[in-house]
Length: 359
Image (cartoon, rainbow, N blue to C red; front, top):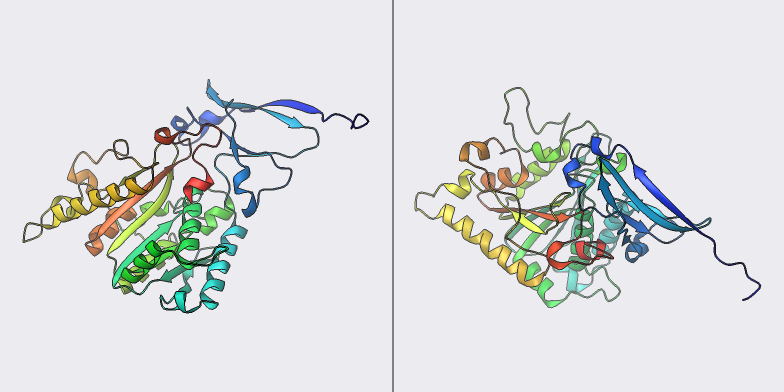
């Protein structure tokens, strides 16, 4: 009304003066900061609130952006929308509730939630298993805890597989997957790092995606003291076997969704005695990526990580999850990378690649 005071606005320019001092400053150009315009902390119900601040610039080693505030209002800024530990626990609880309350349509697929072990700080490493097929698939997320889009992906996947939705119904494509596969899904490989606010490491500074085997004589991996998360998951894989492996990540620099595989490692490069193995894996990789592209317009295959220059270089990286699991179990293994930035092949400047698209 005419008697009400007008909303007061305040324009503030933010500057991270030491942005150049991060471990990977090459990722800053093209970055747009996320902000939540609501006046309360983002919760699972607030996924749709996040927007991109298009004034973001990286100049002379400084990251800056300008935001128009309403006086006394709260705004939250983020490199990518946060996925807190409380939300992680809620995801696990929702999956457990769906498994316990499973009607006949879900119970036949034997849903199970279990802890594979504990982290260094004593947090559980949960795994959700479901499906009655004979083909075993392992999908792990968030080895690098700052890559929160990976756990948003896990949430979307688990909600669909367990019918955690208002309708609580499984769609027909999901039923076909559950008929053919037994899936083991780890939504967060690095809960300690997530709670501590680390970008790439666990509580003792180990990069879990370099802990999947020993590649240096002076450093044994995985180990209970440095990487119990990987040790627990790899031990469970040894018990179940693996026919398909997917490791879900986020990439800071490349504005694309893409896959990489175990290129130039033995399973990719060397033929089996019958002359088929290397070709088999390469064909499976190409077929999987092509099928995924048909279902998701964000995915492309032209731009991604270049393969190693030689087999010797590839062998030096056998401690990476996709390389190790693919060769250890003679299976197709891939890494999925999603961008922190907007997705250049399917641009949306206001929202960018965001929570909805990660899920």
